[in-house]
Amino acid sequence: MVIHKDTRLPYVLKKIRLARQTPKQRESSLRELNIFSQVDHANIVWFKEGWVEKGCIVYIVLEHCPGGDLHVMLRNVVKAKHAAYIPEDIALDMFSQMLLALRYVHGMDIVHRDIKGSNVFLRNSTKGDGIVQLGDFGLARLLGEGERTNSFVGTPAYMAPEVLNGEEY
Image (cartoon, rainbow, N blue to C red):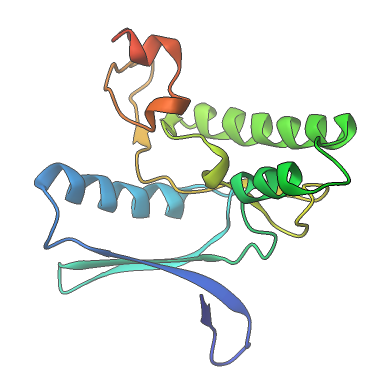
């Protein structure tokens, strides 16, 4: 987390060192910067700015989501002795917001390829009853119109069956 020196607002600074990456990983890091700079939706983490320094470090400045991420929220719900579930209305609202984010990026021919709890951020509530935002486009890919892919990428426990089966998606 960083603080803007003029506005004193908090942001998240993602720093990616390219020198230690394979050519494919470098391409992915630069693609993440490019994708974040193109998207603008209420349910996607807001991109402030980004740049590449001396061709070896990618910096991406993003909105800070003080509510944390969905993975931590769910873990805390399970640990809580007073509740072991998320109320249905909150779960449906969170799900709907993620669908809106996905409809938006899919409309731009972007596939995220790593949707999981730790990449879903809670903008203004630790309980999930506020704005939910999709983030981390490190494995995302911009496809041409009508193009499909069959790359085996993402977090295995969260992969779609067609990815695991090596089918196009």
